[in-house]
Image (cartoon, rainbow, N blue to C red):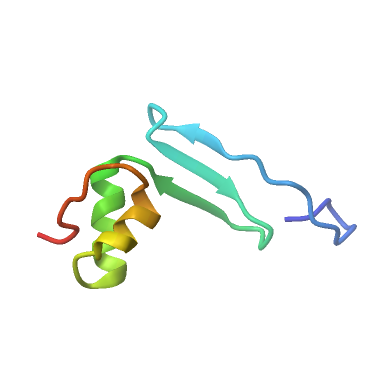
Length: 73
């Protein structure tokens, strides 16, 4: 994302929509991304990306102190 005609990037500020569960982020590539922040959606996304349950270390990196759960059904 840049200032019109300048080619210089501008800072992007996230905005929350849909009851604060979805954040929209305007990225430097000019696209707007939507991220559903509900924990069940985030865990499902982790399953889809990894294609398996996360290890305990991976879980800790992604979810901090949240108690470990199976990532995939």
